[in-house]
Length: 111
Image 1 (cartoon, helix red, strand yellow):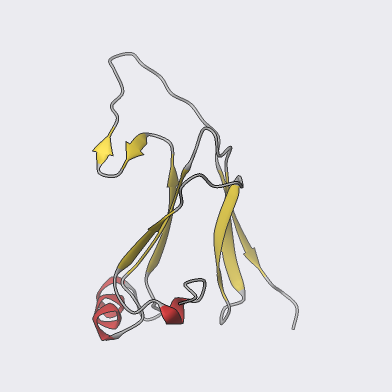
Image 2 (tube, rainbow, N blue to C red; image 1 turned 135 degrees about the vertical axis):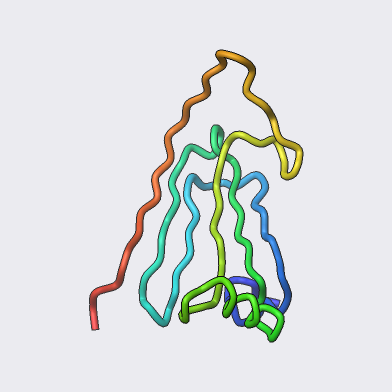
């Protein structure tokens, strides 16, 4: 099954990326001709995840509950502060952690 297309994901699913070779990932909506890209140093911010309720009746029900009128509902997530979901790492008192990440929206403006 080709999971690069939303239409092929029938059930609620999380896709987590492990050991990415790239400092970016993103999503694209072909109907809206728009998307977004996340950029961060993969050695510092290894977390990349896509969540969806799925492209079937169960997912459509949640689309209606969680969006205005423009489903489907998907989440792209990224981060650095957990070792693995749901095992969280904690900041110690007075501890500071910093990192840089960038979220770039884009839109294809050509006709």
